[in-house]
Image 1: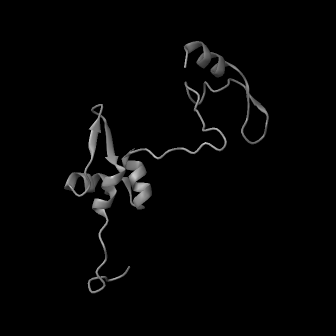
Image 2 (image 1 turned 90 degrees about the vertical axis):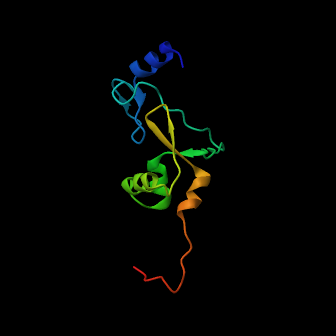
Image 3 (image 1 turned 60 degrees about the vertical axis):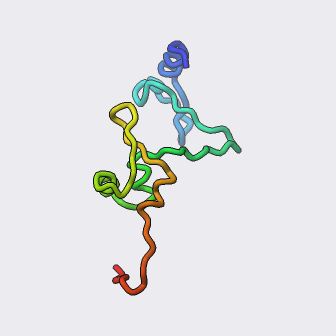
Length: 107
């Protein structure tokens, strides 16, 4: 997106999401680049790679638990651009184990 378009969007007044009232200052107070939303009827394709936050939401555990699983080697992860940690969606099955009825203690 060009700098002129971003400046125009950031400087313009726009309607608030629920009230329909205009909000002075446009989007500049919240973000520098407008967020693109999918069109109606257009489905968002699931990404092949997930962040630790997304994995925690899927597995219903904390982000610290996900990082612990990565550190212990139970969950394979990849580093992108030196700072981002990504997990392949297909690798999530490696940390899911079947429950053996004899050893299940229930919680």
